[in-house]
Length: 306
Image 1 (spheres, rainbow, N blue to C red):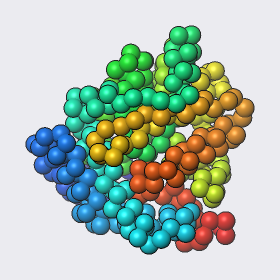
Image 2 (tube, rainbow, N blue to C red):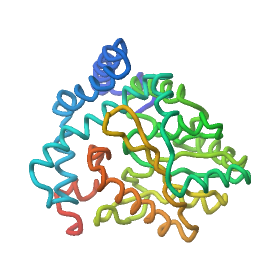
Image 3 (cartoon, one colour):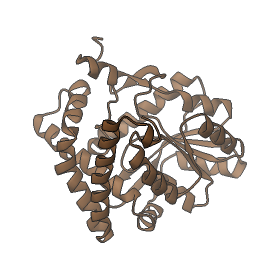
């Protein structure tokens, strides 16, 4: 979709404008409330209203039927509500500025990757923190910036240009630098790494130019660029995720063991395996809304029959 709304076809521009208007209205409504109330409200609104209108339930069901066909119907129905609830909470948290940052700063970090992260900082070695659409992925960035780390992040421009404008302002307010996916952003990102910086990248989306690796026992096209960057610039590659606690408001950050350098496919598969293990333990915190196994879902075939 064009970045300039004026270059969009009239009908597409009207749809993007009205969609953004509705989302901005929901966000504005939530922002007048105290923090805890607004987070719970937005979770409920996305779960009970937006998810049904946007057919998120269908996407969640399609993904689960593909990779977890053994799940009982009651659990599938629960996830159809719980997954959008987490997505809604994540959205409004990102827009909540200082209140969200304070929650993120308070999150404890555990796991073997923490020592590796601190060792890299002491030695001026670059670090790539690979993460996914799990819990709230911006918690890690806010937390590490507060700890004094030179933390940047790569982001993908939203398809809706009206929404993208205020979304980028919100994620940038959590901390900078931010690098937009593309040639210019890649150049800025490389300079950041060469200076010994830390870079956060989400890698759990379908990638058109990626490699066919495994996720939940099924082929999933996955970008290996993160591993290629780690090898090229001798950066520590550490998977890190923020788990939402039972109260729905606080988090715990898990820094998994660094991925040993080998080849991009082996390293990226190790990232997939670590994320899968975490998702299986917290099924409602991964964004099952995304079309992770897109080619096979588009064909309407079980994975492996394509």
